Image (cartoon, rainbow, N blue to C red; front, side, top):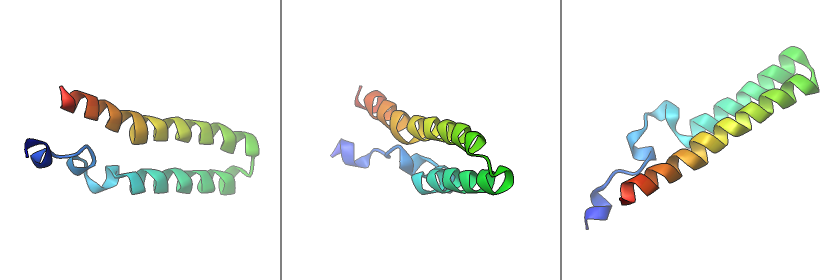
Length: 71
């Protein structure tokens, strides 16, 4: 019963910090970088940074929240 009353990781975040907004912004950023620079190297480097950002905020942060919440 107590576990159901706890807020989840995404429940405590505002709308601009939800998974859909993080993914949308990353994809939009890559599209804009490609349109501006038309350079695969620049877009690839930015894509790597976005991938790291996604891993950090979409996978690692919720997992660490879950581990801390279980203690």
